[in-house]
Image (cartoon, rainbow, N blue to C red):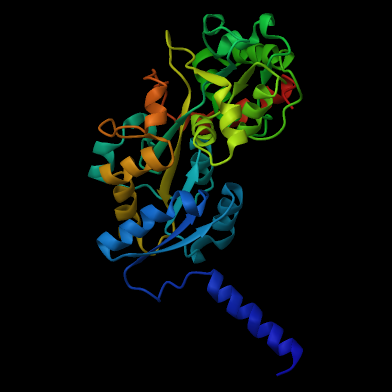
Length: 342
């Protein structure tokens, strides 16, 4: 066998292994997931064990998976898209790669706030984006809401990710919905003026920077903070331990929250099984796993949170329907650019 032929065989074989075969299993569901395998595989294994439906999983970056769905079109093997942030689910909806789903169980279990009104996507777990402050440097009574972060008293005290981060874009999108563009832009300019450093890194990096004395306030998702508190790395536990959580906007709209969620693809070949999988992930058992293994807030009100989340106390969450985050995303991106948010 010559070298060229060997290479061709290897390429074809690799492609077949990397791509689902719709004919391989009669009872299967094909999943594209932007969530890391470790954060979702145990649930998928339980689903297979309970239903006999095989789950074929491909993981990747959220934007790359959406691009893949668009490129594959009608030939996509994917039945289900799992990703983080309502804005990303909205982008997939607008791109025309999703289909609406009617499920009495999902409509009953998942609050309207956390699902797309026409059934294009459903939230499966929650994470809040509160304020974190360094103990001994900031007093909790100095804080009140997101809007207060534009106060000059916090000049050179704030760490936050860049404007190209979807979590920040969604936060700004929620503020546009409540406060309008003009007020939100004024706030964004004030926030930028108070930054202790140019935005860089992820949520964990904002917490580490605050713990290291580079700033006194950090904005991050609860999931990352909890992950650091429970980390096997002593350095992460020590860094997170220097900060305290503050729930903003408790006297008005509530703290901004977002979701990880799922949607059935437009060209799904196993639609019924895809819906069954979403319903399974919204079940009490699966929601309990999310709450305890991943330190995420369940979308169900009848499920207890993990001990770490419980230690932070209850908080009032923003009740705006998360579909508006995607709708307002382009406005948020342009606004952040005008405000000089790098």
